[in-house]
Image 1 (cartoon, protein in one colour):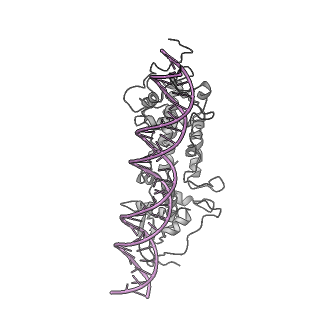
Image 2 (cartoon, rainbow over the protein chains, first blue to last red):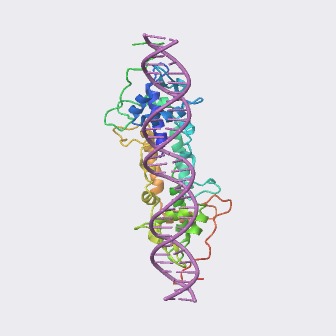
Image 3 (tube, chains in turn cyan, brown, blue, purple):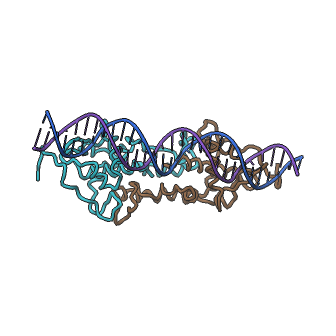
Amino acid sequence: MFSKTTEYALRAIIYLAKHSDINYKIGIATVASAIDAPKSFTAKILQKLTKDNFPISSIPGPNGGLYMTMEGKNTTVLQVLELLNEDHVINKCVLGLQECNEETPCPMHARYKLIKPLLQDMFITKTLNDLALELDHRIRLNNSILPLKTEKKRNKTPTKPEK
Amino acid sequence: MFSKTTEYALRAIIYLAKHSDINYKIGIATVASAIDAPKSFTAKILQKLTKDNFPISSIPGPNGGLYMTMEGKNTTVLQVLELLNEDHVINKCVLGLQECNEETPCPMHARYKLIKPLLQDMFITKTLNDLALELDHRIRLNNSILPLKTEKKRNKTPTKPEK
DNA sequence: TTAATTAAGGACAAATGTATCTTCTATTAT
DNA sequence: ATAATAGAAGATACATTTGTCCTTAATTAA
């Protein structure tokens, strides 16, 4: 349904929503490994999501890494798709017509118009945080047999040392 | 949702289901123009769909062209997607995980499993002929402002001259 | 200030997808 | 048979996607 880029982005972003916050940053290597994606490619994709008011922030240097603020966690999946320019997947006409509407529909229009709202809803109604909260030991973000690894002890910011 | 290849293929195939039969063959140039697609690319795509027991047949030479038998018209859209290796779009996990099921679902699984059957149904329940029959003057397969052009007077086989 | 660490960014490469063009071959009208 | 027509097939070119690598910049710890 989505491109590799988008798949990796969604997995990474859900992982970060679950495992990071302003006080718990995670390195790209850790994220890439956790979601079963190429490290450098993951880095490149996540770069795009740290621009402007994008859902991810990052800090370089020792104990730096990627993290998601509570504000970022309130982003919907659809907003992420829009940032990646992949929202056309759920907005476009099935047959690729630019002018496909009630007046001049394509042959699939009548059926798809019943499903499209459901598809869109799936990406609109829940925030990244909602998805993160649902993650438990059964839910996975990678293809390994092992359950989703819990966060490693690393990158804790010194401003709030709690261990 | 689908690649250009698949979009063009679906449009072309629906056009042929509507406008062609064993006694009324249509040239690639006509098909490509009718569905608003590049001629040569359309030719290449349709080539793939004339192999084996694929839904389209073709006859070269004068008065030749592409056509769809009644058998071909009974093909479902899903079957066409399978022939084009694009059925993964409606079968795959949203996040691209190979192992995404009830036991070890991805975070989107619970929601998508309600929608996926609807999406699949959309492509399974109707044959190309069903779609063709629904085509009327309002329904379009191209992006032009003009209504879908009716078939041109050409390529009529001499075995059954009815005009 | 220096060294270590980490992300950012650019250059590049491979794979795939998209598109065009030319030549070849099959069929049919004459 | 021959010429004309039209699709088949392959070569080629271009674009996008996917992926890697290396340098640069930023930050922190010492």
